[in-house]
Image (tube, rainbow, N blue to C red; front, side, top):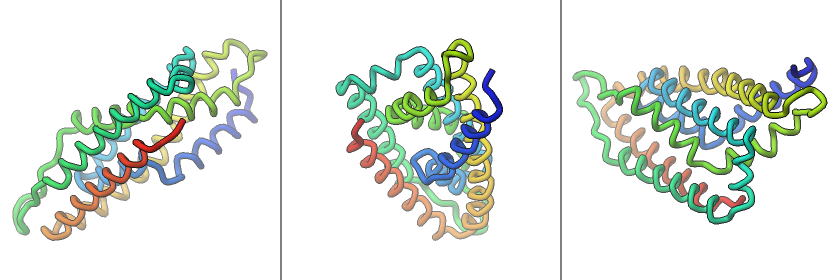
Amino acid sequence: MLPGDVLFTFSAAAILLCLAPGPDNIFVLTQAALYGRQAGLAVLFGLCTGLIGHSTAVALGVAVIFQTSALAFTALKLIGAAYLLYLAWQAFRAPTAAIGMAAPPRMRLGRLYRRGIIMNISNPKVSIFFLAFLPQFADPARGPVAMQIFMLGGIFILSTILVFGGIALLAGALGAWLNRSNRVQMVMNKLAGTVFVGLALKLAIANR
């Protein structure tokens, strides 16, 4: 069991890290603004599913591979960058609904959930970050380290849900208002595509 001071310190650090602008919260923001708050929440839970994978990788030591193998790190980050460019291409080609007609077509939540998983899992820097961050709060004297890593990962996921959930709700409300305009819809799609291209380039040039 983790002591109270460790839980408090780790939770505060996790919330601050979630608040810092990064690929994941920007991804939630853009998808919620484009497709609504439910879409943002679906992406959020996809990202959190990816975080479960990263926590497991750290607990089992798999994340060390991406820290020590340049080939594995490069392969995974290029896959992630390619996927982001695919999303950018979709955003640039996305149609807009005519004013006075029904709301813009909403993407299936399952598809958005899978987007969140792929977005998170295909970023090797998340595994390396977890590998560097989580073990700092684990102590073999308190019991099995793997179990402590899983607990810390769970706390980080709860912090992510709290912060990113707020982002999704706010962006969804703003997007619903902006989507009343055909022209604004087009600008939002182009902006989202540009964001995806930027994230892809950032990931492609990332170092371990």
